Structures are given as structure tokens and as C-alpha cells.
Length: 285
Ligand code: SAM
Image 1 (cartoon, rainbow, N blue to C red):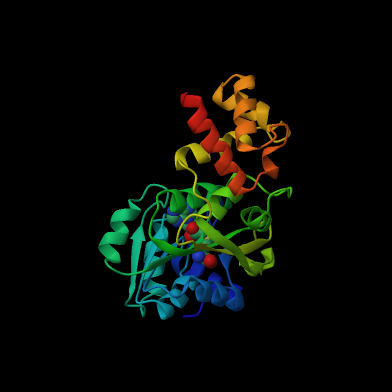
Image 2: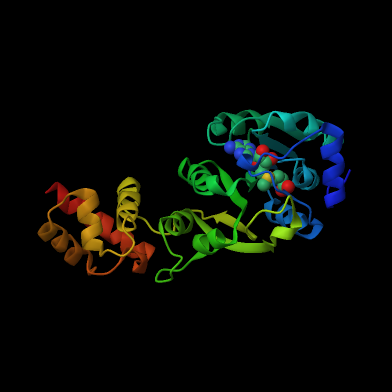
């Protein structure tokens, strides 16, 4: 059963007496064209982990493109729906669980042993940042992550230094991946329609991070500190977060050749790496 119309979604709803839970971001995409684009972008690996399959519209398409799909859905009520809509897809494993809590390393080991794996996610928008952070920071072996996000968040993931959308999440994504918007989806393409338009971003993992700071933890601490107070200078942000005296910080800035009267949103990833190396090396002395 193809789930690409509001009518088909309503039919499933009626069959299972299903009511949408707003808190779980249950807005189901009904556009064949956008679902195909997401599935194409997520293809190319032997295995795909899908996060938030809903009624299974995307899962059906992923199953046609991969050897194996594991679909992680938090809502217990959807498990029987998925068993029904995916009854023809023998290569799909339905997993009930919360993507923020599930042991993804063991899931990958047990379901995709020795396989290349991609991820595809369409989740409630308030958990976009923690999910992206988890998928990237835990160094899970995804070659690419295709994720549906609020349109404005897509702009942030791809933003260049100096633009108003550039922030800590841009740096995180661009450190590990090459982000690219691959599709847009108007709110009217979902049932029920959400309040915002959406976009699909593919985060293609880089073979090595885009810059090489001496210490990754310090790099991300520096990034977080630099964006902690949007309109403040780097000097004030770093002082507030690290508690290092300002004269020392100024010396670190000089060493890194970065003027700390600048704002965090103007720094490139290379400059963040230089700054975090200076803090790391000089603060110890
Ligand atoms: N993939 C389907 C589609 O494109 O139509 C459904 C997407 S819907 C926006 C989000 C789905 O994610 C829902 O099925 C919801 O129950 C599920 N979900 C919400 N929070 C989740 C979490 N923490 N872990 C796993 N699934 C979650």
C-alpha cells in the first residue's frame, strides 16, 4: 500500500483508530516526489537506519534501495501499523525505542555487521539538534545522514561564517560533514500540516574532519563558549565561559592571530581550531 496521499493516511488512521500525537511531531509526509528524493539521498549504503518511520511511507522506499533497513519508532501504537504497511518488506526490522536513548552502537553491530550504513530521519523539530549532535558526536559509522528539518534549521546547518544563521550547530555539522539541502517541503505536503515549512538536508560525512584542532573537546568547548552570548565579543564570551582573566585571553587571541573584539559568528572553522589550540596550549603554562 503506497502512503502518498492524505486519503491513504486517513485510511490507515481509520483502520487502526490512530490519533496523531503532536508532542511526537506526528506530521506524515504524503509527497511522492519528496519521499523519493529523501530515499535516493539516503541510498548508497548496504544498510539504512530510519528514525521516526511513522506509518512507513519512507521506509517502503528505503527498503527498495538497501539490503537492510532498521526503523526506530518511539510510539508503541505505530508498531502494529508498521507491521501492516511493511508486511511486504522482508528486509525491514522494526525497532521500538527512543532515538535519544537507544544503544545505537549495538543496534548497528547486531543489525548491520560489516555493512556500510546511512541514516534517514524525520523527527519532531524540537529534538533536531540533540539528534544531530548524537549521530555526529558519538562517531557512529554513518556515511551520510539525511534529515528533514524546519526550513530555518536547514539554513543554519549549511550557513557560512559571517551570516546571521551561522552558529554552533553549523560548526558541528561542517566539522564532520558536508551539508547540503536536497529538497524543500511545504507544510501542506504533510498530514496534519505542521506550522512551518521544511527542508531535507544531507550531511555527507567527511573522511577526516574539515579542520584538525589539537583537542576536539576543547575545540567544541571554544565554539560553544564563542556562541554563548550572541551580541557579545569573543573576549566577553570566553571570559564568561572559561573564567580565564581577560589579559590572558587577549594574549591567547594574539597568539592565534584572532582579534577577540570580533563576534563568534564571524570565525571560520580554521580560526576556531587556532583559537582553541591557543587556549589549550597557553592556559596550561
Ligand atoms: N517518517 C514519517 C514520514 O515522513 O511521514 C513520519 C515522520 S513524523 C514527522 C515523526 C515520527 O518520529 C513519528 O512517527 C514519531 O512517533 C517519531 N518519533 C518522535 N520522537 C521520536 C524519538 N525520540 N525516537 C524515535 N522516533 C520518534
